[in-house]
Amino acid sequence: MILIIDFGSQYNQLIARRVRENHVYCRIEPPQITLDEATAMKPEGIILSGGPSSIYEAKSPQMDRAIFDLGIPVLGICYGMQFMMHALGGDVKKSEKSEYGHARLAIEKKSPLFAGVKEETCWMSHGDSIEKLPQGFVVIGSTENTPIAAAANMEKKLYGLQFHPEVDHTPGGPEIMKNFLFDICGCQTSWTMKSFAKEAMEKIQADVGDKHVILGLSGGVDSSVTASLVHQAIGDQLTCIFIDNGLLRENEAQEVKKTFADHAASNIRFVDAKEAFLSKLAGVVDPEEKRKIIGRVFVETFDAEAKKIKGVKFLAQGTIYPDIIESKSAHGGPSSVIKSHHNVGGLPEKMDLELIEPLTPLFKDEVRELGVELGLSDELIWRHPFPGPGLAIRIMGDVNEKRLSLLRKIDVVLLDEIHKSGYGRKLWQVFAVLLPIKTVGVMGDKRTYDNVTAIRAVTSKDAMTADWAKLPHELLGNISNRIINEVDGVNRVVYDISSKPPSTIEWE
Image (cartoon, helix red, strand yellow):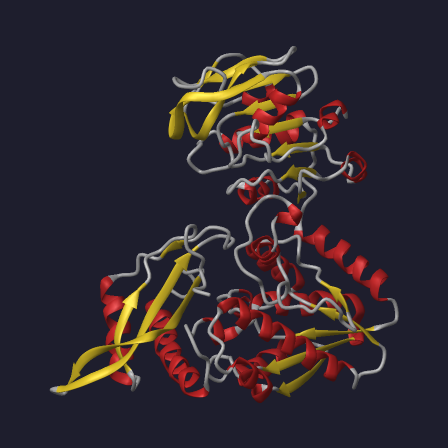
């Protein structure tokens, strides 16, 4: 296990990705973690992330400096390196020249960290630099503007990098990460979906005992994999509940019934709660408020349904790691909150049910790997993500039956064109957004004043970062023509060409 300390870097999730790609488990924790808490996790190594602060700022994130005396290998990246050097007696000062983007890395001294790494480009993003190294450290790498771009105390297995090995812009980064994980920390490649599934099932069995679990089944990848995992752990002690919140795609409820008739060997109950959700959402336009209302009504509906089942003590949810990260500051660290997730931000402080969230350590692609391990079908595993709040957060402004019906019709046309073109499996996600504006158009020599819809299509590996999809112009033209011709009430289609970051994938 590798412990990652979150100092607020925009790249800290990429660090976790790089560790897990090597089949090594990791956890991200805030700098406030105590030494006892850190050592109790028994990490083979510790990585200190970068961050936006200067080490000399009054409110810069700090942690217990005795972490360097534990005898555990430590790799400090950017701010993490500066914290290490400052804590151990070195000097960090504002650079005469800030360094952002590509830089040429020169290897100054042989070290286990740079074994097999060539002198090549690396990715810099810093305004401060190391002026003086602590006792016992030597320079192992430099760039033109940064004489101390990498340093090491090889005897104590303490390493610092001013550049970011976790990003794709550092070609030697994967090799550097492997060197740290295996040669320096001595990690084993034991993080596999088979081992995760086994441990997760054992924990579910231990937590649940002879009690009953209910699970909100949406038909999406996360809830489906959770349902399969929990069912394989406790069998008929699980009851899946599908809540029709009135915010689903066209024929979604019928599709879920059809799909899970073949794939779920557990009890499934279908609840029509459209009126409860839509009445509470009437007139609400703020996206955070929408999410929290939907979360509250979801739990209230579950509580009511749970009371009909004897022995229910647990609510299982398909919350995954990016949901936690975007909804909370990385476990209390200095990263900023992006949005409340429906499985995180909408829960009331007091609930009658205890939560079981077995997928919280996983990224989306890892959830899909787990689905394969559990024997789920490709059709189910490769469904595009659909948000728990549903179409409510794809309708900008007021949510009502008329606007929901309009967006559903748009969505049907969009998905039909995407799948006919063969782009269904090439995209991470594709959907339509109904905007709160109308524009003038001309149809059949008549003036129209109708709605605008935005199409969002992205490519991604784990949803932590995403790029807008470069769909062929012909395909975009077909989508636009069909929507405008077939969906009454739309006279303009626009295409979203924003990446994440700075934008999120969903609009709200």
